[in-house]
Image (cartoon, rainbow, N blue to C red; front, side):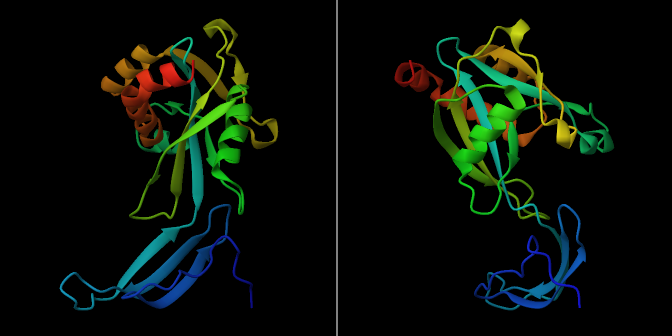
Length: 212
């Protein structure tokens, strides 16, 4: 019998949830489980049987590099195949981000991904929040940070990414007000970057004061 992959553990026990069947139907980079279950409705009655596919991506981290002296952020552009499948421009504007390994501290992931995807060296972090990205189908729980950095000139930003992962990211240095205008114009098409920029819009004055 094939061993169950470590990246697709059985669901944790929870009051009112009864798991009737739980199988791993795809054991790739991100396993896919098929779970048959019932849960307790708000009126106290059991639900009917449901069968859901569960995509196991676990925890991710996104970070917004911000230079309070320049009042600017570093964003990245990179190719995204799912964006192409959705019918939008596959080169997306994003924050540096990556997946968290078991036992790895979220801030350590933020530092690593900032370095790998932008070449920048943050010297200070502040947590923003945690959110689910796709609670209807995946267990991915995102941790968000803002990082203090010293930004290069826009013409010195360059390209980065891990060669062994065929990763290619292009850094763009954007003044904070211009980034907010991109947000308002819906030029930012992914939730992680939207969340980080909305947060910065409300905390920017404090960061410029405290991080000067």
